Image 1: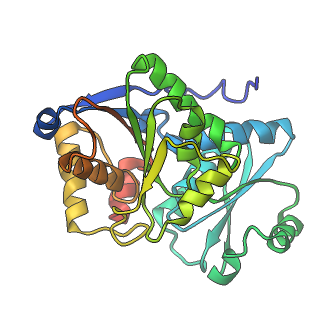
Image 2: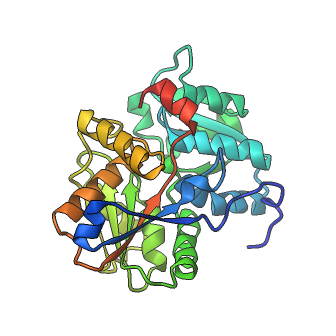
Length: 308
């Protein structure tokens, strides 16, 4: 799909690959690389960029000037969509779960500063956000728009995430056995699965009770289910955006050891789970693992203000 949409924005692609070292990795004879998608762009990075890329191109193709999407009050996706609208010239509308309140938190303040129009749905109505009735009411209120689902996970998200495999095949000459990623809505994992040939995909669910993710990923794949993937449900730490002191300490120690900033909602849980599985010999010796850094940091300043 050819377009000049992204020509004026400098994106760090392909994102770099960084090898980690630690006594544990040496002891278990594991090679671990981090795919630094957090470095793609200061405001638009990680899997959010990957999932939005082809949605933005499709919106341009359909001559849609406005993008509407959904998310919670601290949504990385809302943050990224607002940034994308500002960078690439789209009007954006963010439909937020829950009641409106002032002052806005850092995520919603940023979105508003980028020009995103914020609106709210109570939690009961929000659960019906994908129904024709709710979408019809939103169209009556906001006019013609291109709809991106919550989390950005739809069919248009897959090819952007699939490009990660192409980049890794060049960067590591295809010599890796596993790719690990945090899982919220399943789009990133589905995109990776759609492109991988011999590698295994391992997702780490960040939500409690996320058995539905297996069905969602299968649906995104066109109701096919290759045998090369699984989702681990054991490292959610109580649910979305939940954490404890153990996870907070891990994130701090990881940053100090590797000079890579992570957060406890997505990447922290994935790396915690990954290192725990390495300790438990889940991976055979001499395995090469790539951990996808899906971004979501929203800048250290926002992170420190939220205390997340």
